[in-house]
Length: 239
Ligand code: DX5
Ligand code: ZN
Image 1 (cartoon, rainbow, N blue to C red):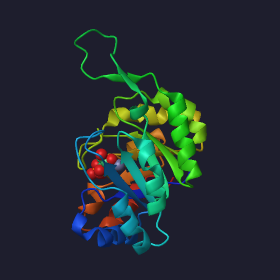
Image 2: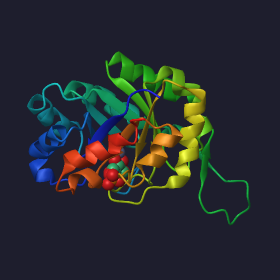
Image 3: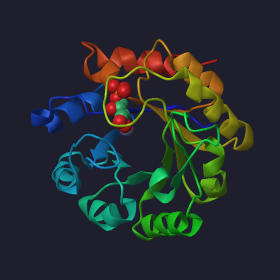
Image 4: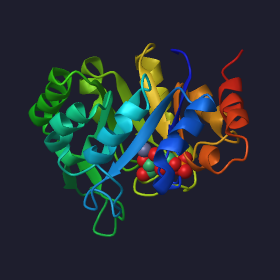
């Protein structure tokens, strides 16, 4: 796998102190920052958008800013986020999918996505590149991993969500690890990111499945010693 990287998610930080919270995470050894953008439509929560990224950008020189776009219209915010100074634009596949039934009868609970609009998703990827950002493509827990295979060669990172997106502080879903492993088995050098509930207690599962980019929110933000948490997250990667 490529080298391990840790990204702090500031979603559950004191957002009135966002700049100092970001600095605190960088000082603790976070390799970059993961900024969770929610539109109240793709997920049932609201956070912030490109105006906040634009204010942070000059105060964090040299820090890579990933925006995790939990939004229904990913293409709409590409140019505004690029202008604001985001370096990596991670969007979801689901807005380019149609919801279908599981085929398992009328009582099947969780919907399964399929019927990817490949052309629209590819065009969004191209648009992100034209705006000179790294490209991340994410999938939520109910989305089968094989749906991203056609896009892997044209993106920089695949994000496998390990919680249902929308809120920080949820429990890590170990049953997402087979998705990570199936990506790692096929793509030896791909950056594979896991996001949601990642802590020192479950990072060994992420590492053995093959994830190399670790997003951590509450485990870092709420710790009295975030540098120790970063060190523990990375320690399982030292063989
Ligand atoms: C969930 C977000 C995650 C999350 C990470 O919708 O995308 O980035 O906030 O925070 P923890 O580590 O607390 O789950
Ligand atoms: Zn996130």
